[in-house]
Each structure stands twice: as C-alpha cells, then as structure tokens.
Image (cartoon, rainbow, N blue to C red; front, side, top):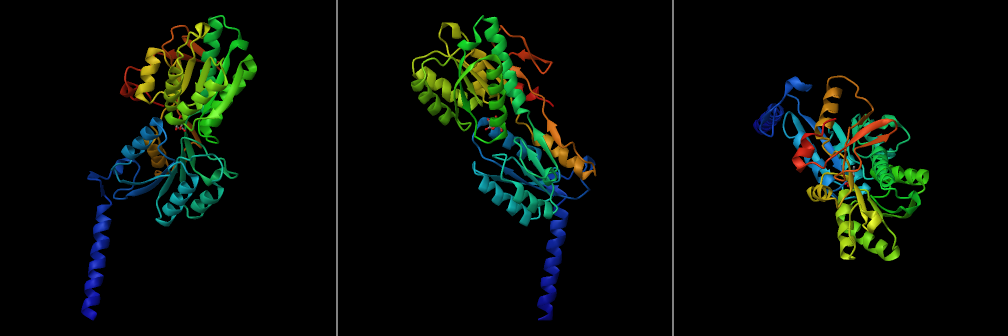
Length: 360
Ligand code: GYE
C-alpha cells in the first residue's frame, strides 16, 4: 500500500512539473518574457464575445484569437450567441477557472453589476472591449477600449448635411429612415443619437427608427416593410454594413434605385463599419454614399492593456480608436465635427488595405 502511495505521489509530482514547464511553451511558441510577462508564466484570458451577428464581429473575434495565439497566453473564447445570459454564464465559468483576466465584449450596456462584482471579489481584472457597460461602480472594470459611436454618427450626419446643402436641397426635404443596430448596445445608442440630434438641429424628418439587429436578413426585412409604409424615403441610415447590404437588396427588389442623386429619385444609403468587402465595393460604386469606419482590430489593443497591467501600470480608463470616413461621391472632401476637420477618404481598394492603414 505504501508503495502504491509513493507511486501516486511521484506521478502527481511529475504531472505538476510537466504542466509547470508547459507554461513557457504555448501553442508551439516560446513565452515572450521581454514583453511584460514574467518569464515562464502563462496568462490565461477568458474572452466573452457577444455573438457573430456581423462581419465586424467576426473580424473582431479573429483579431482577439490572433493576438492571444501563443506568446505565453492562453485564450478561452466563449461565443454568447447574442444573449447576455450566456455571457454572464461564461464570466462565472471564467471565475471558477480562476483565469488571470476577463475580457468582455458586452451585448448591451445594462445588467452587468452583479457578475462584474463577482469578478472583482475574485480579484480578476476585467477589460471591456467594443461596446460599453453601464455599471454604478466604474471600478468594477479596469478599462475599456473601443470606438466613439456617437462621433461616428455625427460624422455621417455632417456628411449628409454638407452633401445636401451643396446640392441645394432644402433640409425639410430630407425624409430619413434609421435602421438601428441591436437596441441597447452602445453602437446603436451612439449612432442613433448622432443622427437624431442632427435631424433636430437641421430640421430633417425622421420617418422611422426600427432595429435591424446589425444583420443583413433583418436589414432587408425592415427596409421591405418601411418601403411599403412610406413612399417618400430618400435617405436610409443603416447602423452597420450588413444591414445596408440587406436594405439595398430590398430597395432594388422594390424597383427603386440606390444612389446619392436624391433630387432625381434615388434613395441614398449611408452606413457604418467598412469591414464587409461587399459593402466597401458598394461604397466604391456609389450604392452606399458614405461609410463611417468602425475599427474591429482590438486584439493587439487588449493585449497591450494587459501588458501594461502585468508591468504594474494602470491603463487609461477609456481608450478610443481613431477612425476615418469614406465616400466615393466627389462633392464633399472634408467634414467638421466639434471644430475638428476630418478628410473624407476614397473607400479602400481592398479589405486588407483598410486593415493595414487602420492604426490608433
Ligand atoms: O458596428 C456592428 C456589430 O459594436 C461596433 O456591432 C460594434 C457593432 C458593429 O454587429 O457591425
């Protein structure tokens, strides 16, 4: 019996040693001790992604997987399938697994107080990525990185204003429908606010605001029903590219033409993201008149934040990404928002060109 016990102890010891050594080699790559990690330490990151609703989202997921592939990191990825309850379950699982960091890309802003308190009690730092969380105690998370969604909306609104003024179109002749993103998400709230405020200030008519849930299918469905309800729509503000692709399909199927010549009956489509290749192509052709870029490549940014914390630093609480605005309509070269001038760029030639020049 004593002998068996000794063998078991030896085996246990061996397995601990093997796992210990394994921590310096993850996914076949050497641990990168020079970049903020302690030599030989594997950092485990639990990433709760909200879903896979759009091309933006899939590119964002890939960026995270790539950034944490090797170099002393292990990433546990969980797809929330568009449900906050799944994300809450994932976070509780990460807490049980005693991960080193939790990265959360939240579906909606509200409803995170309890689970983030649990993470805090467990001493696990939380980094929020993309959309935001609205929690009473901001200390429940370390920091956030993402886009200024309201600014994106204001940029598109500024472009609409500059373009239509240049065309001599009376503001009261703008009849806009807003195909919104998933309701309650920061991207929806900001983009909707950006348009709604501009419409009020300029005297544009917003005929309807309806959610297309950031998907092509819903975008098509919502646009089809809006075209039946209103016969004077001349601007369609889609809160992402996938919705825009669906909406364009619906407009063309109804026998109408998309484009910027709204004085001659075309229906103008504007959008957000510039990630989906089809949408960028539509922007080159003028089927989408203007796209505000929303940059999904947050993997390396999240990694840099973790490295700052690992090195004993405190990252900035809110980290914004710089973004551009694209149009192939020649009339508007610059827009001004809050006294800042943004040049309006030609849509990128390829998706990789868009990624390559996206820094910030
Ligand atoms: O614009 C949309 C995605 O939160 C910025 O979510 C993100 C938005 C993005 O589904 O395509």
